[in-house]
Length: 180
Ligand SMILES: CC(C)(COP(=O)(O)OP(=O)(O)OC[C@H]1O[C@@H](n2cnc3c(N)ncnc32)[C@H](O)[C@@H]1OP(=O)(O)O)[C@@H](O)C(=O)NCCC(=O)NCCS
Figure 1 (cartoon, rainbow, N blue to C red):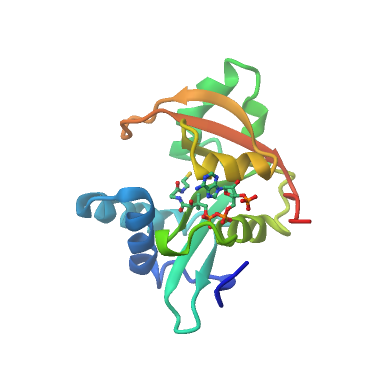
Figure 2 (tube, rainbow, N blue to C red):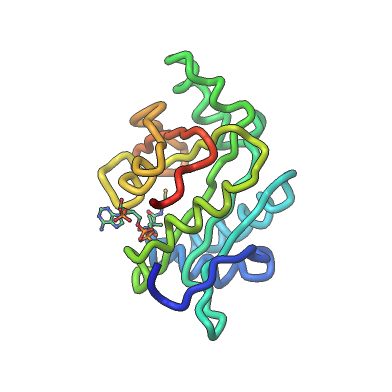
């Protein structure tokens, strides 16, 4: 990984505005969407086992972050994807699974290994034997990264009520492979 960026545990509640700025640049969020996400992130951080890692520059600018938590079938995300997975007999992936909820790297710092470092670091040492996530169902750097880490498609064309574009749900065994 180039840059003097440091990957370390992140107090996401304290840095939520910095994180959402990164997400707004990386993913494209309107101000209204940022305000909604802010409440969602702060709620997620109260869930058992929620953890976050950040990528920061030497002058403490946050340029990337990831957060996630052990899945619960009661979580909103899980209730949306469950019927898609169940129809393929794959809903067992919702149990004993660590969900990657968000992963974003500021465009000025992408393609230097930061995203890979964030997701491999956050999943290191979690007790769950597998990980799941959703990503917009198009070929993208995110989908390429996830596939290269062993995430395979569990469901395609998944529709979230609030999202215009369909998503793919992907799952991988843990631990994720380290870069050789
Ligand atoms: C997805 C994202 C977090 C990856 O972060 P990153 O720091 O740029 O990723 P890395 O440099 O660690 O790249 C890792 C892999 O991603 C893939 N990748 C990165 N940029 C890519 C590109 N432009 N085209 C295709 N694949 C690409 C490659 O598989 C790469 O593997 P390599 O190391 O063998 O080249 C970042 O692109 C991002 O923030 N995108 C916008 C927001 C987003 O889509 N978030 C995910 C929501 S599900």
